Length: 392
Image (tube, rainbow, N blue to C red):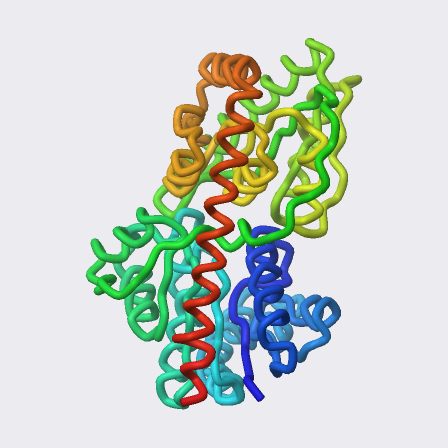
């Protein structure tokens, strides 16, 4: 029996990460229905409830910290970092293959410390090498990391993997610039392109707006509050414009960290036709996006889901990966930065997007077909060289 483990920030409220997992789980259950599955993840209880497989906390500290603060919390964190390599080894040795399903595990485009996920990813690779388990980084995101310690841990974690593929060429080249040999690494689409499409819906005239609790990235900590104010001010102003034109507005989020943002926007535009319903998965997000005509979004997987549902989209993005995805889908001209949003340009992009909606929808449908075919190719390669290879 094949034993397959899954690793990452999974089950903890990030819809993009969990959607990537859903796509790989569909592949695994179709091709290896008798496989023994397990998780080393941030939200083990949620994963066990959803998939019926055993799950372990990614970090010892999380379930043991409770309400600890100050010196006690610091002490527990240090203890956890000492215990986690042994916990990881005890988990990894139970599996033939461990899959890291997508996610931006090799980047620091949002605030990230080296002793957080990079540390856990490093020990996954190190213990897998000791136990003979294969680690597959599948359609992951990467970017050049400037912080020296974080960069050191990430690159060494990547080198320890047995299989690496990236969700775009930008990610592959970023790893090369950081000194990783990528000559054997491939580029395949983001795993979320492997999810089932929602049922199409008739036009409602609604506009989808994907919002985020955005404060910049690792290099923006000194001006995080200013970035957040500028971003939210632009989004609120844009929503107010839509409301003044009588447009229904549907607010979307992509992580539990964003949960307070819709309420703040709704309060700033009283009396508008704004809906912000809770979302439970990327499939749920795509079903809601099927009800709108066009989308303006910030989180990477909000943008991806809009494109996958063939909705003409503007990326008010926070990282290069947003721009790369938009270009790959034929909408590279409809991007701008969430760090320095330009309201007038946003309105102009929105008007053009609506004028060209039929044309752009056709482009997106064709690009989606290609993405789906390429992902099927990756799953075939994984079966041959990673999963089947682990049995020899």
